[in-house]
Image (cartoon, rainbow, N blue to C red; front, side, top):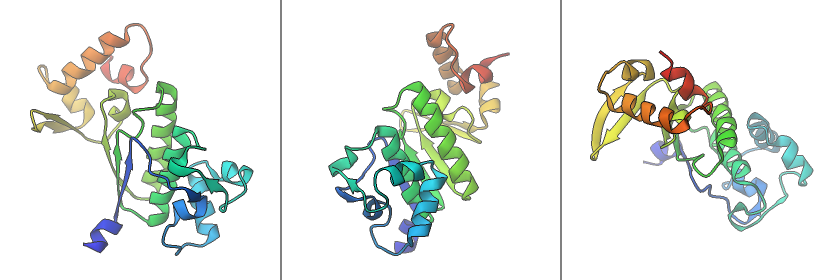
Length: 186
């Protein structure tokens, strides 16, 4: 059971950071070197911020209140990388972020986690958050409704995913919605 848990990491909508130091938040068990922690922070573009704040021993306020929402998410991502998790779940990890921050976080998550060889499971309500995923699972009424590539799901004439994309596209109106816009062009 411990081996299974150690291979998993969860990055929830509300990041979990503890009052203490950045070092403790990255490596609560104290098994990693400073070089490993800094490399992990570098991967998620937080090394400079860490140095500006005083390094690995800089203070993290209770719940990480002295960091922005996006920074807290990136610190949690660095912790997942450091842990060596092979499966990372992003549970509405960017739901509280604005659309631009969401796009930046998603890009960072995908690049960094895929480079590390992680399988990434994304739970999201924003379709542009999942539009470039390898596979999409649509859940409805407590069960699996559809599962396939985004392209194949969009090709199902009366499919749930296609309907959700059309609805989101209509709601977006003339505004660009990133990957979502590209997927729905016919």
